[in-house]
Image (cartoon, rainbow, N blue to C red; front, side, top):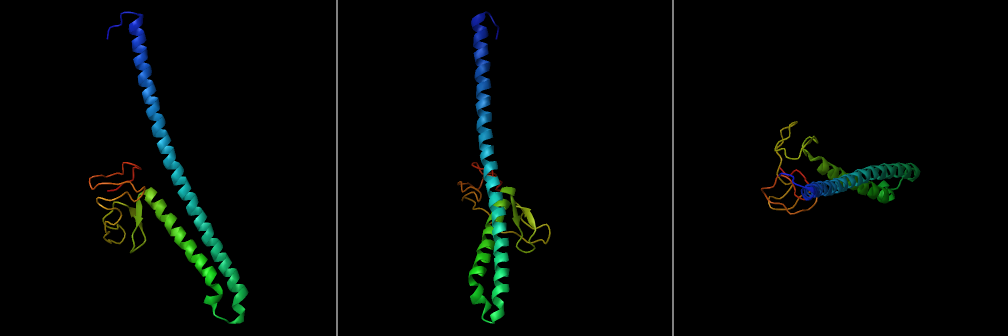
Length: 164
């Protein structure tokens, strides 16, 4: 483009300004999306930490109750039913949040040897166990965010979760 006068300079400046504005808006949108994912991951980590504390507290309360009540000789299960239920509930919550964190990290646990492996693994590198592809449906939904996915997708278009 040959610049002939003031109008050409102004038009060129306007075009550059438009492109800079477009890039800045795109950057802001991407940054906001990534911040949302970081915020969600941080909340999941906090939930996991709270679940671990709840489990520890339930164990402490169970220990105190056993110490205080075990001396009279009656059935321990009936005496500690509530405390045992609290421990069970805390363990379930801990497992739930562990699963959420593994999803963020794109790993799964081998049911045979308890080794964490990449979610796309077909076999466990530690014990050789073959994995069933139950992590997501071929034409189902993303296990991380619930977005509908197709069998051709390698990543979720909504949250970026690695599907294959």
